[in-house]
Image (cartoon, rainbow, N blue to C red):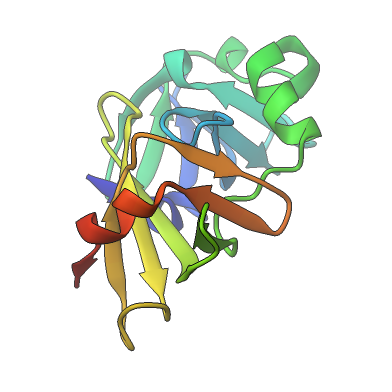
Length: 162
């Protein structure tokens, strides 16, 4: 399991041809907050911001993210699911988390995902129920909004102190 904040800033390497292609600028998740769709990549030899769909990923290593081929990176418009997520401007990190009954659970500081499948395993929270960081395993239902994310009240009982 790896945290989004650990991946952001890592260099992107293209295995085919062995070239550096920039750095991970952001990790894009679907609107349910359950699956990583891909990455926003900035800078590098190709220039300009590009995205890499999850299917293009070969490995997430401790120092770099490896993509299979240079054509793995595309303009956001050529990856409709990633473009849709970017168009909604859904930024998971930094959202306040609340139950659908109006109870504050803290702020989403980060999220962890399986580096082999892209499945979001859960969310690191600050504030809320615990004065220090806590971890919310991915809830059955998560509604991502512009300023807030909502979970069912039952999700509160799954929060673990970290």
